[in-house]
Length: 194
Image (tube, rainbow, N blue to C red; front, side, top):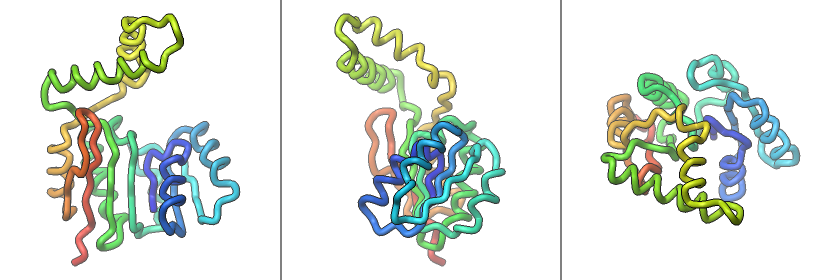
C-alpha cells in the first residue's frame, strides 16, 4: 500500500492493525512528520518505507517505483492543498501506480455545494473547538481561532462530484463517493482489470 501525505503514519498504522499488510510506503514532505512516522514503525512486523516528497511535483516517484504496483493507494487530508490541475495529474499518476483491480481512496476536504452547507460545516467545527477549549474561552474566541487557523489559506477545495468526474475521465472504474458529511468526503475508484 501507498500512503500519500502520510503525516506521522497514523492511517498506515490503522491499516496494518486491521489488515494483512506486507509492505507500506509513506510519502510526505514534512521532516517532523516523517521523523514521527519513523518512530511509529521502529518495531513493526511490516516492511515500511518512508519517502520524503512533495506531491506538488513528481520527484518522489523515483523513491517508490520499486514497490509498484500497489494494491491500495490512499490519501488523507492532503490532496486538497494542491491546485486543481495538479490534483488531476496526481490522480493520473496514482492510476499508473496501481495494479489492475487496485484501489485508490481519498479521505478529503471538498468544496461545499452552497454557502448554507459551508456555514453549517464551519459552525460544527467552531462549536467542536469551543467544546474542547479551556474554561473561559468564549464561542467568539473559538470562531476567531477557526477563521484565523494556519491551514485556511492553503485549502484549495474542489467539489467531490468534480473529483469523481476527473477519476472517471482518467480511466478509473467503480468510482464513487462512499461517504460525505458536508465538507468531508471519502471517494475513489479502481484501476480497470482489463
